[in-house]
Length: 192
Image (cartoon, rainbow, N blue to C red; front, side, top):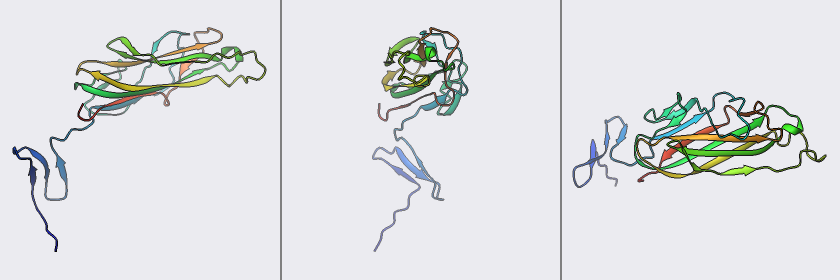
């Protein structure tokens, strides 16, 4: 023998709605914590002529998804709108556009900025002798740097990602951030 309970609204002991049904099988959850706001933005096209060994803001100008219109593509920054603890992640593909050995990358870096100041500074340095006959010219023409971690934010804090690339020749015109494969995202931790 089976039992069936039919309700339109399910409430807790204090009368707060937890979920409701419209009678057609569509259920709406109420008062459940979730991991919003959240967002994912990416670099829609290549960002060329990144200055040599200079922290440069990555111009994430395309939003893949977001809740609450929290990512601003006009200034390439994210403001959560809700205080809490967030998991933030980013990946930047840094490349030299000249394939000659003496333009090979020697340094690639990603930095997370909070309210205009750096908060994290994971760094990868590649130090190789570009004149070594065993090193092919294309070996170090591109590199991907990632960062991730948790951060506590107020509703009005804002986050930006900066990249840093250094090539062996010190040329300001050949380093770029690769479009479509460079991204920046995050979400609120449930209950935080």
